[in-house]
Image 1 (cartoon, rainbow, N blue to C red):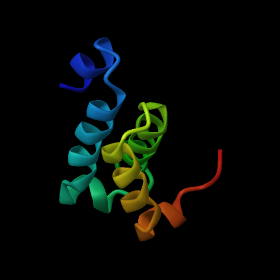
Image 2: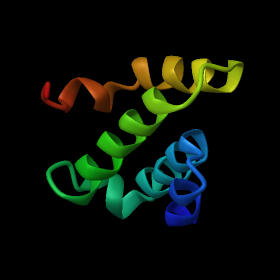
Image 3: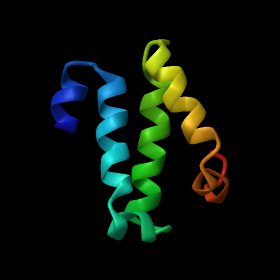
Length: 74
């Protein structure tokens, strides 16, 4: 689904799909590997998405998530 969303340039959908992957307990617990990668991809694609109410809502939910503070700056 992620590849399909990216092929269609639907960045918000790709961010939602990566968010679902990140919400998986085994991925979320892995703070250095797949969990970090999934969260970074959520952030990248939600920022690339066109500005809509849904995109703004997702940005605000990510902003208050404590896992975001654990990521390093790029």
